[in-house]
Image (cartoon, rainbow, N blue to C red; front, side):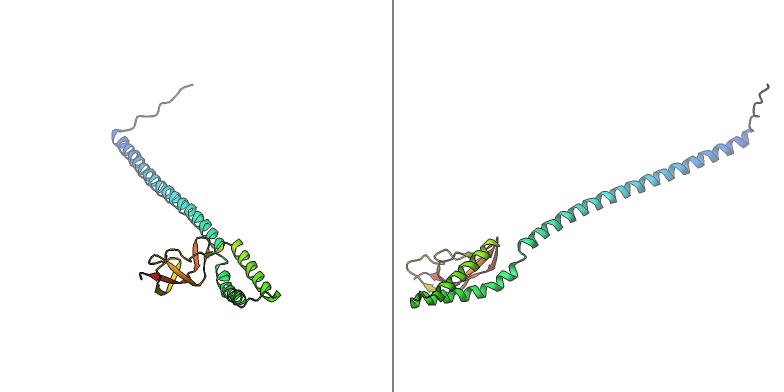
Length: 179
């Protein structure tokens, strides 16, 4: 068996082939660098998009919890007018000395309504004799009160209510001034 060696290429022909190979190699390296750059950009975009989506999910969950917590605020606010009327009725019955079953029934309904509201996070704002707080009280009148320090609640004209940590309706009050 005889092996034939390929004939050595001529110097002019080898340079052209080598240059072509080098040119192809440089073109491939440039394409690889470009592909790596695009890969890095897409990876960065993916990571930012994932982080944005996770933040969106957390924010949506917080908002949903808040919505559920205060979902019945409008209903509770609407019921306050009826509760005010029950309060007026029980106050009038007490002033008249009425101990009839009707007066007791109105008091019972008022107590039930307050209990229902309390179970859903609605509570009265205790204002009588407390310092005036513009976040919880609405000053309707100012009057001198020698037995209270200035800017104290002298009288509650309309009960205020909170729902959890928010004011549902501020208490309408009379505020003391210096005598």
